[in-house]
Length: 550
Image (cartoon, rainbow, N blue to C red; front, side):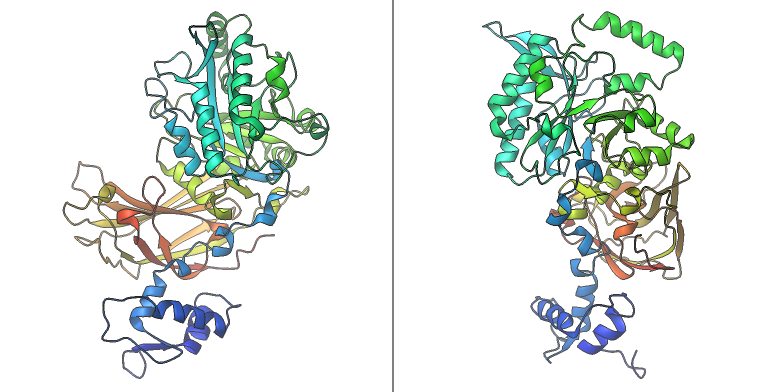
């Protein structure tokens, strides 16, 4: 209001001083920045032309509303979302790397179909560490061994190792500037099959296959920039290594009781071929990362930097519970760790990646075929740095001193929504009854923390719902470096029918801007296309103090 009259236009000076600098906290913005915004807004074709303002250095209320809902006003800080080439020159151990588990599976861990297409989908979703479980297959008409990929000793279908490698070659041909693809090889093959694997890797990938030399193995790990456009192997490096090699199966067995471990060992001994734990020298030579069994942090930290560990999700919680977080953070500054879901998750559900990220683990592998909250958290994290799949870890995880994580108080109000689609983006069906859940995924003292709050339901309005302005949701953020806030839109259904998922956005707290902000919403596949092109929320975010990182 202005003198009890509705303001019909906004001046450039008011937009700068009263909105951008005061409400939004964008202190560095200038009048030139505002004029550029105004030029962009005045180029829009708006439905209501009656109140358009043609005066220089002014915009109409319709233009102002368009700005509020635009990407330029996104809650996700554009400086954090932007790709930064200069950040890609640190050793690989200094990054969080977008990673997947049993990438080939389309569904559950026991009976689902395996598909090469799942690798392509994962790559286009930003995944850069992909898993292959490789086993002896049959032989072709000439007697040549055929390595296959599937979830061993289950009813999942089998696909050719060769076809998967071809898919990587095609992807890199189309996207030659991709930062390194890391293949986590769960190698169960006998020597002849491993030799065929090497031949296929070299013939298909050619110079795109990274082959480490002895000089490159003696110091820090290579950087993403040095490995750009290449495929890197994780498996077994020392020739003839049999005692200290660590697979996902071995790491998972460490979490079992003695009785379970004995049963697993007996089963494994009956199922594995006598030479299945040997490593072909040809394969060892082209492998960079060598998985080793964890014994102690002191021993691990003193090992070669290309030696690494794998941990199941339960082992992650156990190590953090027993106050080993700081030692793990120190190890992860120079070495690599990979974590993966519990074997009990036969439905291919996921665990929260937050705790593993808080220890500096680089490869937190998730089941990409399951669009649940943890995968959406992962999508939000790797929205940083231009969705390159590599995000530089915060400086607090790279310090030698024991640093207390930075905390903050956060207030969130859900104001309105715009163009919220029907479930699945369908064009038909009744109007939705939307409500929002705001979830904070966090950790403190080695424990995962989840706080969920819910708005009221707006009936029969997905086009422009407005929520109760009086409802403020307060959150105590314990670890700003890793915490992620998730906004999820649901369609309320009559009981007992479950509510329908509509759309979602996950925003790392370290990337969140305060003020009146637009939340750009994504579908279950983390895309904004079709019915989701313009789906967004308008929210008010307030921090008690600056979220600037140490």
